[in-house]
Length: 303
Image (cartoon, rainbow, N blue to C red; front, side, top):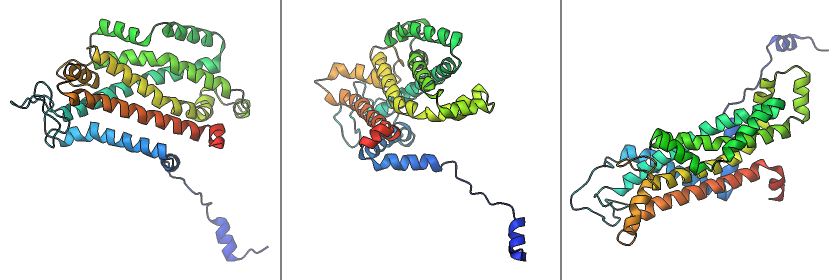
């Protein structure tokens, strides 16, 4: 065996370890998602809508509450791309701010409800026994109430507004996410890697957070866009009924409610918020379908 100076120096040098960038995996995932035409189209449309809702209000200096005399119910033009409303306010900026507020409320409701629901579902599925029984029966009790009825009751208690509306929809999201997480955990805890982790002494929280959560990520990634779509629809529906953000603050549901009175006189009034809701829903549905094929090996093999 060669024991020359070069080999001795090599032996004394510390072992070099290749470090992976923490963003490498998400970037690869986005690259795979963008290679699918449906995924690329959905991401492009969602990016445009996000720019419309979050960047346009910062760039455009027009106030959503500003009324200009003599500009009532104007047709779409370069000055007013979406026209004006019955109070001579620019509908372009009002739709942008309305989409932003509706989207933020829906995201808050989904994230808040899913965090609580996933925690309860993980606990019920992994612990079992009395904890599973109590959590499952509580979830069944919540499921007995229709989501919109529960939202109306909470809004009647706390008063109308986006805060109470988001809280109501967050509670509405808890039962579904709890049952989804519980089913995913029950499927995974019988796998060999969970038994191996328990054998070497890993705690229950470590097994759930470090092992089970990674293998159940695909289930939540597929259902998350659908949950956002449902939340946005409920927010828009309740806003249409006047139970969301109150005038003069714009929301998509409020714009739909105001535009219904001018369907024949000013068709663009109703078309803009309806188109935003429809395009956003279709994009998230396409994204959910592509994620389902990417994360499901059976569907991926068939594709």
